[in-house]
Image (cartoon, rainbow, N blue to C red; front, top):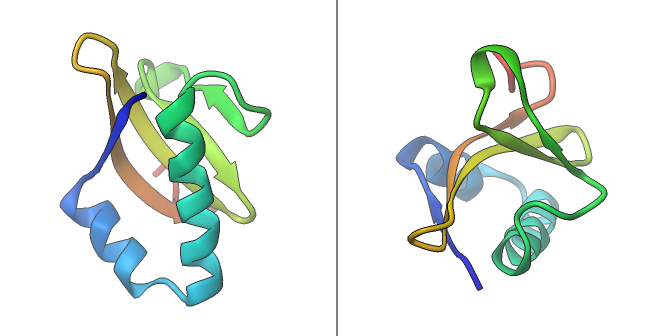
Length: 86
């Protein structure tokens, strides 16, 4: 099991999101707790975002890093797909 930790920016986005999106994100976080690398919606990123992963949930993206030593998933950003990679 991994711990999922949200950055302050990600936490603000989550708290301001509508209820339906919050429920989707909760399911995303549950999936990340059990296995942050294997899921159909997970992709390893490259280029300037090397070392990051993204979880696709509808039109939104959750960008995160994994620390296997501490068994922690650090969610850095949650954003609409148009804004996620900027």
